[in-house]
Length: 270
Ligand SMILES: NC(=O)c1ccc[n+]([C@@H]2O[C@H](COP(=O)([O-])OP(=O)(O)OC[C@H]3O[C@@H](n4cnc5c(N)ncnc54)[C@H](O)[C@@H]3O)[C@@H](O)[C@H]2O)c1
Image (cartoon, rainbow, N blue to C red; front, top):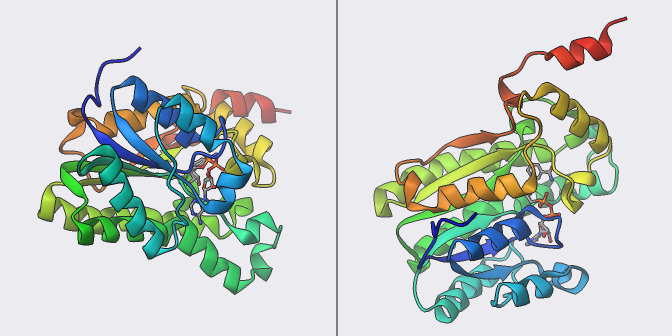
């Protein structure tokens, strides 16, 4: 159901690779809610993924940008403002990648070059997106910027490896930049801590199926789907959340507040 929550708003959506991507679902919902936006992803993802199909469906364009490149991000904002006809009202950061996870390195044997890459791609890119926006004065007053996080920022999930540090840094950037941008231009900056979700990034973590099922069993409402995450993003982009900023919002069916659930007790009872 659409409510016109983003009518007249202009946005930038990163990270849509294929129809499983959380960003893909956000784009579809943002269109339904009346927004216009550009799509972006790393040049390599444009070759491998299906983002062009999504652009057609949303009647928009794809602007290639490696989120670690300040120059690419400057071009992204400038082109987006040109194409959309004004400053930007919402930005989705939906970007994560760890070469250490991808190449199966143990946490006690991390490659530090790759660790730096993990942090640059998955966390520092969020600061870059905010800093470039501020310097170009690319965001409208009251704009909303959202990044996607995971509870491994607070609790240990061994297979999540150096991505845990990246998510902790991402959430910290939301607080620090949220203070700055709120004071300067009433811009909101938040992270959404999402349940395990079957996407390319998600299923790249070894043991994904087990922690998907475990989280589902632990959560009174069950795991939140990618579509439900998109709904949460829309609410944060909308004017209904004008005073919500510097928060990490758990969108996880209650998982983050649980100790143990009856389902887990039953499963482990001898
Ligand atoms: N899937 C899950 O279980 C889960 C849970 C919580 C949070 N998240 C987070 O949600 C976000 C989106 O991931 P997803 O699950 O939709 O998977 P996804 O694989 O569909 O999306 C990740 C995106 O990051 C992009 N990316 C990687 N390197 C990039 C770079 N240098 N520049 C620009 N883009 C780059 C990829 O091309 C891809 O589109 C990530 O931040 C992820 O950590 C995912």
